[in-house]
Image (cartoon, rainbow, N blue to C red; front, side):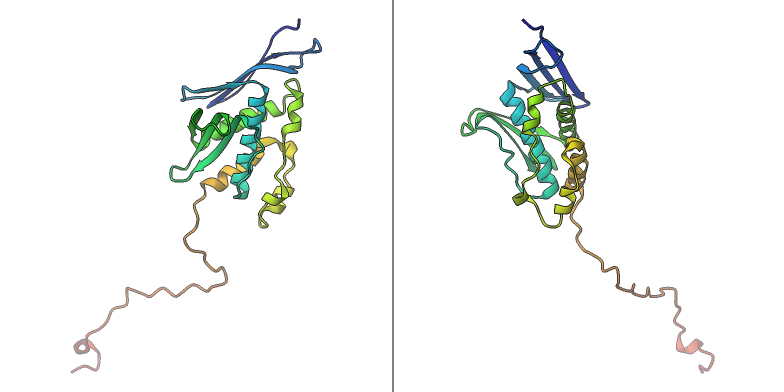
Length: 213
């Protein structure tokens, strides 16, 4: 029997741990027995098997693209070990939701993430996605953003972003867009500036004018 293989992907605010073994007696972890994801500062630890990891990748990828496009994207998560993320705009934070069954809302876990924590979660997923020695079959679960989810004003940007750059490159743009406030007014660059009145102009009383009596 193959020896147990342990892999760990670490960011400042997130730790993703995998345990499994190889079915070919080599260094490639092709079979996953247990996975755990913990956000630093939270006592809740999300855990599961291959379906859990696949759904975590899909959910994080879809949410990153949602931040970039501004359009909702389902992420194609399965009903078992269902995972999704949504924005908490009033707090400028993100809510990670795990449910054992998609329809079973009574059995779910919620983890509120800051933007930095979400970025670190994304970074650990990116580390896993580029590790050729761990679950190579996961490459089949990296979905580009569907054409029907694209906004016209960003489609060129999305099309020019190769998937090989990983999730973190996409996150840089996504998080930047998420944190930029909407401008209240837009100035016309062709509009000439209005002259500034000279508040230092002194008004001479009539009695003090040169011709005054």
